[in-house]
Image 1 (cartoon, rainbow, N blue to C red):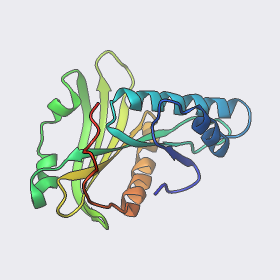
Image 2: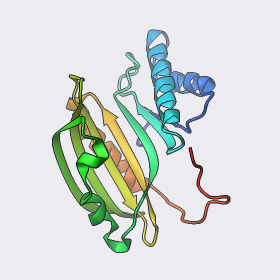
Image 3: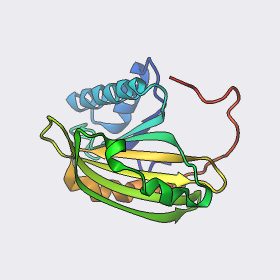
Length: 193
């Protein structure tokens, strides 16, 4: 699913120390760079756990091994997709203000639909700044709507490196193209936070 060895992924868990250490060895050079990557993975994991079970998997992109700096983050979630065949269009017609919050300034927004092997795809590229923060963040939302499903797989990419937004989008599309989704019931139902 991940495009190359500069990406590392895991399933969020309360104890991620061993996973963070292992991934930092895979993604960064020995020394301070590994510590930067390890701490970043722990922070991303902690943030995902605060989202009360909605994040099914995480990944980080470390394009420069010598620094260990995480250039982009990926959260894999599942979203509701009512509307059958028109679910992608209905999703794009939703209230952005409601989704992003009234304290978020949307600097730039672009959206379109497409197709990938696993189903229809919505692509949303958003530059935003949260109230009280100076830094603009780039988000890419790739939602894959499998035929006949009432939910969609949502790939949420985030970067503060705006010069890398196009590259994150290219790699995000590669990930979306590679998804193999299996539909079915979850024994015992979906976890609730």
